[in-house]
Length: 379
Image 1: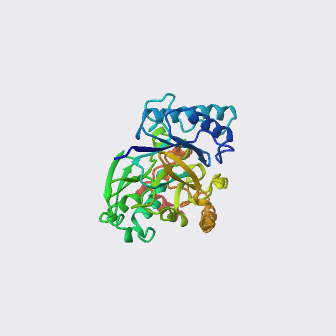
Image 2: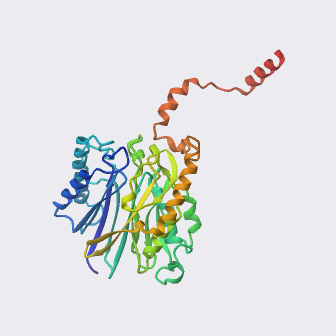
Image 3: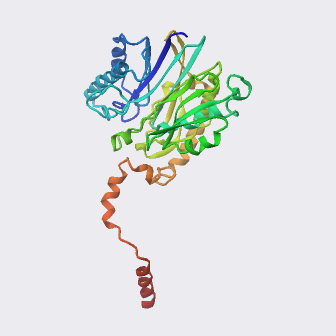
């Protein structure tokens, strides 16, 4: 057994420039300086998608390491100070606590981490999304690891043919369940088809038992009890050698699927795959974006990133996403562009509805019948 490496991706929105569209360069410089001063890390990258900062870090301390999480927390605190100085929008909005308590989970930032022994070649993809929620990964992870029409390796690669185990979280009840695929495929779809509640947390190879993918499943609004912005999730996918090829991991995003989020976290929109230089969502604060950063790991060193969605082959996906966005925008405040009321509980909508509550009166069936009869008799 060789030495294990931990890949941690921790993200937070701690101030938008301008509005919710991007991250000011000074925040990225601050994050770079903080991580460079740490002696905990083997390597790191600071990236962003939209107004979210992504800290991509490698180390040897395993997942949920208090020191690594504290490092990330301090980075976000120092970036928040800069954000407040620049009067950036929503400065520190993802930091739901005033003091670090040993782990950033439940404190606002999103976390995706995995520990593994590096293979002879270790390609990984870090996906990061803006203006959407953790369930946005359900469809692409299903396509990558369960759909032979997307991933031909499930059919022809003996290391993949046995299938994968999916770990699914119920974000409302804080419960988890595992499904073994392909034999429990239909059972899995019962739940992950409702991405607002059930999210794929991790995927494991049934051949090797190793972790293949992991996502952040933090729901800011459920933690805060109020609307504080969308969750803007991250996801790590290992590729090749018994796992989906890089191209198989990217292919689901060639057909933009619909996700919750967009403007004020209250709308449905297409998840648009974009290059890193196209990741600032400005049209109606959207449409929701996803970037893909490819790395080769070499003794924990991050070789990359390669900007995988910058490929012109995804131009058609971007065009399709824009066409879908045009149609949905034409619906304005009507569903299905606007989220259904049960999904608006943690937005500002309940405040508006509360002001109108006193204007509603009970409708009695018998009383209404008599009233209409009297009105007809008068005529």
